[in-house]
Length: 115
Length: 112
Image (cartoon, rainbow over all chains, first blue to last red; front, side, top):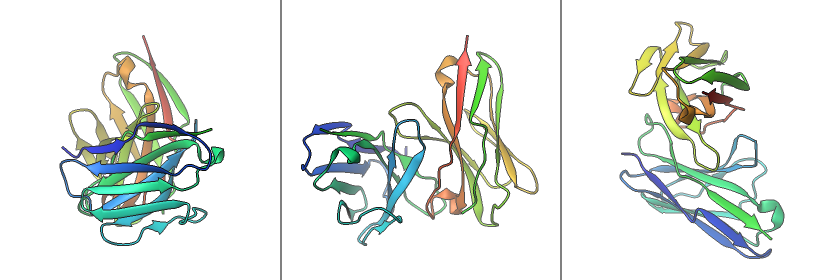
């Protein structure tokens, strides 16, 4: 149980393109979803937290107009990287949890490469 | 948020027991301790979670002393496939109620 699916797993696109990443909880209802970014050989950095039906809460330094997060249902959250540039290239990972006393479960990440 | 400190790396051999200790001196009363495993180019995988004393599941044990200022993840009889980065996280209500702060993690390397 507690499976989180993330799609796509790998994206290569040109600079200026907008990219959407989907995160789905397959066998539980995700009241809260989290989006992380991880650069090579570094730890995960939290970008934002989203609760179903509410606006996402962004961490300091993360541009909310560049990283659009939608959490419209209890099983789906999306992260859209708008007008992506090479510096946005990274490994993006989502996680989800149902109740507050349960641990977060992570997707397998999306490798984003901007040319 | 409680800050965690772990060894940056550890080496072991197949069949040995590995113990990874994490320090979290500023742990709050409501904080749980959660451990994750991460392989390259994959998302972290939940290993175990605990609040106090000892927790055991099919893959690991978690030892938490009475003062809860540290915790030890114990992996029995490791294999090559246990080579990964292990993260110790501390947070309220199971580490899931509020945001998680990932530290540097411990790179475990298992050899033959």
